[in-house]
Amino acid sequence: MPYGSKSPDTIRKFSVEDTQFLLSKGVKAVVVACNTATAHALPQLRQMFRVPVVGVLEPGVEATLADPACQRVGIIGTAGTIKSHAYQHELAMRRPDLQIYAEATPLLVPLVEEDWIDHPATKMVLREYLKPMLDKGMDTLVLGCTHYPLLKPLLKRILNNKVRMVDSALTCAEHVKRMLAEQGLERTAKGKPKLEVYLTDLSEHSEELAKRFLHTEFGKVQRASLAS
Amino acid sequence: MPYGSKSPDTIRKFSVEDTQFLLSKGVKAVVVACNTATAHALPQLRQMFRVPVVGVLEPGVEATLADPACQRVGIIGTAGTIKSHAYQHELAMRRPDLQIYAEATPLLVPLVEEDWIDHPATKMVLREYLKPMLDKGMDTLVLGCTHYPLLKPLLKRILNNKVRMVDSALTCAEHVKRMLAEQGLERTAKGKPKLEVYLTDLSEHSEELAKRFLHTEFGKVQRASLAS
Image 1 (cartoon, each protein chain N blue to C red):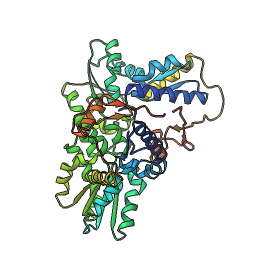
Image 2: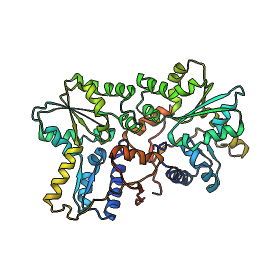
Image 3: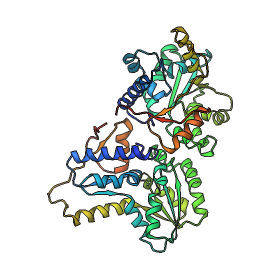
Image 4: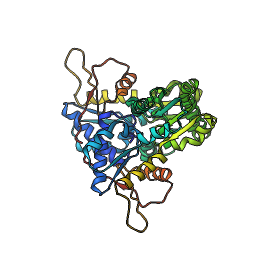
């Protein structure tokens, strides 16, 4: 962390190591719940590993195009995601008539991690980032980073309910459910499923952050030892 | 990068690898030009390697105490630097009567990297971070992160010339010069010295950032291959 400012090569290297670690735990499928890693590493991961690998980009694109009336789509994400042109490309392939605007918004992850999700400074930063796209009449805004849904309440007020927000989290979960059913991979065991959380680095801050994002109780966060 | 949010173990691991890389290039001395790495890794680096290793903390402390009239010292830095209590400890050892206030300011590095060094949002963030220390009558502010000197013009306006700012960069350079002289390590070769810049990751942004920080011309930025 963070992936958003790293080079494509490094993002791919880390993504492969992360996936290898998860496979060593015996997982049946992998979700790349990071837009930057999805944008740069998904094709390679799918080629290298046999388990299904789901990214957040495709569900995000599906959710965006679910409203056929959308004409002017804005995308915000990390520098890595925006520079990859992955969203722009996928959207343009399926809807060549779409007006697409993209803006790298690298300050949003630090602001969310600082928990300033309703702070005047965050509002000021968002207004500045969104202005060019609002000026162009954007009707849909893609939240192209898994940190951004925490900014939804503030974004709603700034966008004044005039712009539809697309958050790929829910679509992604539905996507995974459908995929597991199609491939006969659904859970058959009874009893409460278990959640294990691993991080590649344990700072004091990380457990608190994990709780804020997951809104659920889980055991001790464990450290993942990667290849490097 | 960034070191400021990583765990002490990871900071030490990376610092050792960075130093090994520099030694493989035949350097005669190493400057740890990062407060977080200095705070967590300097003792270990000095123990492990034979070349002189200079950190930014000691010069910063010296510069702070150079004005004997200082009574209330504020320190800003990354979460890692502030949590290490390294500055607090060094200052308290030398001046037990000092009032010391410390504040982790994790948004400042992203704001500097985004080049918003004179932006209203940055001003708002700084005001909020500095308020508790200003309320307590701070007379000296230690810029405990090598990114922060780029915020000096804005800080000067916020602090209204009433608070002395301490930037360890100049003191650190003087420190290195003196150390090289004392140990007989000064350069004897004639001709223009050469600067080589290596980064552990090359993103598109990195060369631009390096130029902004170093204010000088240098050849192509090269990638450092570390142990991991």
